[in-house]
Length: 134
Image 1: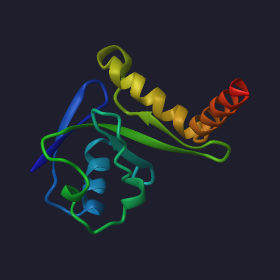
Image 2: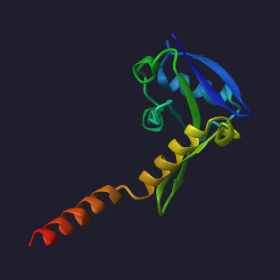
Image 3: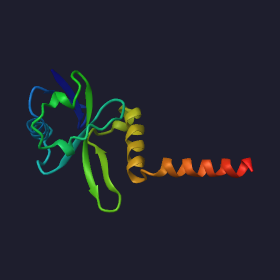
Image 4: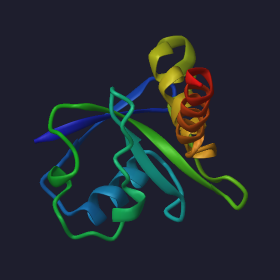
């Protein structure tokens, strides 16, 4: 059981899922030449973030979170006091080679910046409908 992680200048590395998440994340940072203090995450091809940051000390198997034989993009998790967290792709030039990924990351960042945006739109829309019916 393995996954492929995309990062850097078109680099791909295969990782074994038959290990604890804490070891998987440590090995991921080591093989991708990242600082061990940095928070990282992975995003699948549908744009779903795997939320490894919350599980970085977990002793559950990596296979309980990640799907075997899938491709994931390595993300850096940046904490910002004002806006919460943002994700930065560690796959360089992804907007040219993976335009779909660029769009997924943009949408993800928008959701994190304004999580109530959909709710507010729904309320505005319903209030307009009420006034139009009168």
